[in-house]
Length: 461
Image 1 (cartoon, one colour):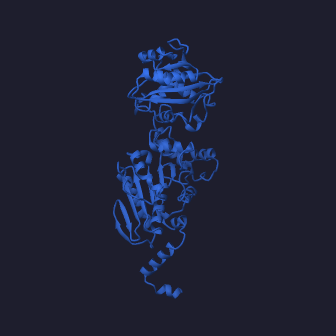
Image 2 (cartoon, helix red, strand yellow):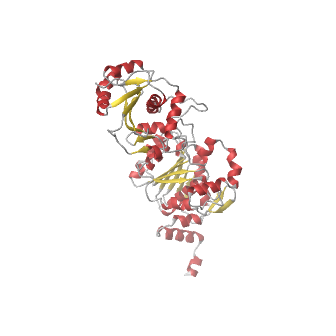
């Protein structure tokens, strides 16, 4: 048999080896461990997989993967290798990368071609350029820059959305590629954070709250042996990060980044990676399942609007002075007189609302509410004063248990608190579509916890 193998031409050997692989159950981890990559510090080296890379690879046939990662921890390299293995071992595969810009898209394809150089048994290459690689086994790897229509016309075997938090047209791209999973294709979304005002954060938030069907991965810089050579194997997260911060790499590089840059590039920190107004808000701490408690007093925070939504939040205060937001109402294109009679008054009576705290600039609207018997009141306060009071409820200065909790049945308020940000380079909140629920909450907090309201409350009729 050895002599028969020796008599084969190189091309025959290549073809026989390739066909034998197709009839086996390919081990992607073993395949990648035989490849060589270009390491940013050590040059061309063998692809030795880190434990978290093996874990991500092992989950490739499971639910869609959502990967929150630090910068330069080897995830892009891993996914490029996974794509190559898929194209080689499964003929007819279509693999699609979508990156935030053209440069990033071309970089991902270069990672694939770098891996190809150490595999001498690949199918023949029919076409290779800066956006795609086509193989003779009908497999195709395509890498596109984000655009409004990216991914819309492809029935892909696997889709990778790279640096998705930074991607323009994220909503359109996600809508275009998610049917892939319905047809049996695999979806992987990967990114460093960029605050909370984006789809990547919302998907991560939903997954951590138990919604959706994502397998979550969170890769902190301290898990990477290149950054934390003496402590990356420590199982306890706090101990591992403490060891990493005491290490040489951290001491040498931390001062090169601002707080926001460091949070975004290395800490997997949604809150600090953008100038959020309520940076203390964390759905894992502040969102829970609860309902109306008839033994506690009930209040309302109201932000007025017509084209922008009119928002009403129903809240209760426990004997321990903890605030629970248990119901939200958002309405557009409805006059306050109609809402007051048809929506607000029945709810106020149902929950025995004691006081209805409003935007103090809405004198006419307050009069409409009071005209039907709603106990509408208002108090003027400085914007910064109200924001600070609300932040102290989210995270008390003594770092004790939070004093503000929001029901999971208030998804719009949760989303707005997660994305409400300051204008870039200022301490002035950005007045946009994410401020209405937070403003309604702030009016309640300012009036209830800072001082007495200006208008006397009315008893419900």
